[in-house]
Length: 129
Length: 284
Image (cartoon, rainbow over the protein chains, first blue to last red):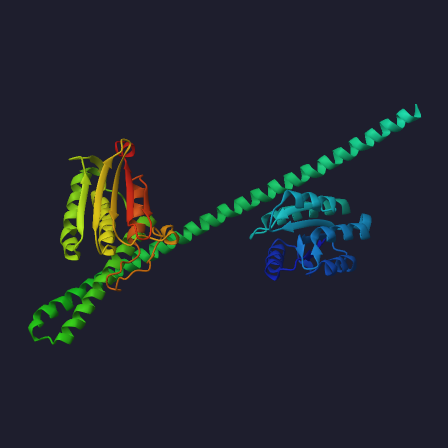
């Protein structure tokens, strides 16, 4: 099963790095958006399996992306990972309340993100049989 | 009964919500800890990468400066020899030009020597040749070498050393280099008054200082004095200026001996450099 990933990230450099590492790890079906509104629209249109969403976006925040997607797609919602450059326990709780499945800090080697992604992809594959 | 049931039900619901909230908070803390650990790991990795780059740079600088030293010595010797041979036939302009050239070569040689020392210290190529030595005698000998220069500038070179002898296990040449850098700097920047060299036995360590009545260092520059290639605003001409490496080298040498070096200064009130050499480490 091919895992489709949506990256919601407004910083071009971060988007480039994440995409590069994801492709290197074998995730080739990747779409992206740079805003909250664009992220929600793409999630509804593209139906990704996993959404990777930055905390800070030009027109809102990653928690709102989580909440909107989870509300609009209900049980068929994708898994969501919230990523952040400034680690904060309050933000982690906010992400969980908004429906995030994982929360991780941004690093230059994307190791925490790839680990979180691996676990979620595995659970999706197992569920799909 | 039904009211009691309702009360119990409400309590149960409250408890369930509290448990859920606790779970979310725990999740938040766990994820935050994981994220901090990941960042810490990344910092460690970056530190290692930087160390590797720094080692590479030291090795490059060491190789380069080593290669530059020999041709520079040949150039200096050649020009000095020719200058001596034709000294009587030189016009004042030619003489002045040769003098400027030789000063430039001297400065370049000092820079190369200092960079070589620095690269050796950084790359770990510099090993201390530890031997028992009398630091009082070393300090006095080093000061004596500067007396003529101090006299020429009209400043007093004082000594405040109450003990006749303090034997320490040190690298003699390197400690002389520290003292030379400190005394040389003090004389260079002092136009009136004195430069004082002092040694005190503090029990667990020996404290040496070089104080001067020079212009002092601003608060802003104090934190940078031991940095590499640091040159501060002064009235010195380019040929009088140092390489900006002397104090950094002194810091590394004192550090290799297990000691500390620091500076106390205020603009207009002179400067005092103090360094320590521990006794306990030395007596091992």
